[in-house]
Amino acid sequence: MRNIFFNSINKSKNYIKHVEYLLSDYQLIRNKHFSIKCLKVLQPLFLNSNIFLTHSATAGLEIIAHLLNIEKGDEVILPSFTFVSSANSFVSQGAIPVFVDIEKEGLGIDLGLVEKAITPKTKAVVAVHYAGHPCDLNRLKEICMKHQIYLIEDAAMAFGNNFEGIQLGGIGDFGVISFDVTKQISSIQGGLLIVNNEKFQKRANNIYHNGTNRSNFTNGIVPHYEWVDVGSKYQMNELNAAFLYEDLNQFLEVLTIRNKLSKIYYKELLPLKNKHQLTLMPQELLEENYHEFYVLLKDKLDRDKCINYLAERAIEAMFHYTPLHNSKKGRLFINNELPNTTEISDRLLRLPLHAEMDEEDVRYIAKQVISYCDE
Image (cartoon, rainbow, N blue to C red; front, side):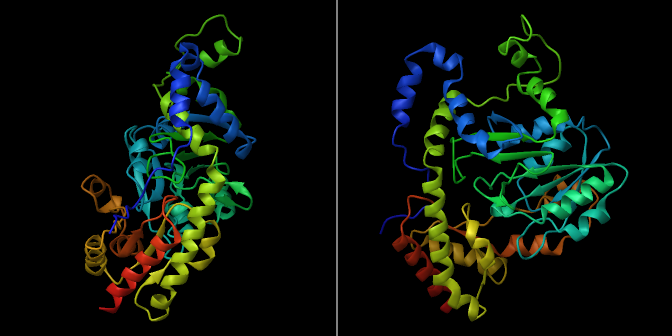
């Protein structure tokens, strides 16, 4: 019996060839050969945005914190059910995270609670597109515009996902996408910063280039570049860019495979939903489900027992986030109880989903989940 791992990188057809080519000429590295190629593939997805390949989605969020001049006492509203970078990028600049609960259906931020959480100190709202699925971004944009605060899309899990035909990350003032090894399209480690608000696009270039006006120099606007702002080494490594370029060349194929497997999971596990033995993700989300396939068990004990049961059968299934408001650092901030967040975190189980799996793998996993639930 072979192991079925939770995730896997996509099989690279040309990566070694790309690396050999990159190392054949120093100028290719110096001129960001594969980064430029990646940006040419990505730019049509974000036609009116400035996009920047970063060493991580975290780097993109940190740049946004600088762009917004986040300082001590500023408040940033976000869900607690997210990766730590969604908060830490702003907390590290002195901001106070204001955690609000998530909706039970799409697991995104509860818009009914967002406006209640806004105060004169609120600087921004971070909408986390959990599993690549957005909340009602039209409504959230209206709320942000009404209160003159910024909308940040944490679209880390959302490459390939859209809202009303627009790629997620390209709708708010800013967006970030992750190309981490755990994501559907990967550079092993990397990310994308999307700056949609025109007034920040020039400064974003400076912060991205170590706080210098290097982009002006590269474009022939100034005879030399110099230190003009805060910044850091946020760029993606060219070896990572070479890997990403290979993944981007096959991204439609990869997304199609993952989506097909998601639909098979749903069909195979539907009898358990009908018998109220577990909860499936909403069926309407399946049309653009690329990142993960999750189910909800009865409680934490049930979920953890299922993880162990599957592990004994060579299947690596995973829980997900420990809510930030319940963490050691998160408890330092004053926040309300978040019942949906706590419940979902306890019950959620992510099943293996990647392009190296086939239909028989999914059916085997589903069979084992059914066997567990019927015991």
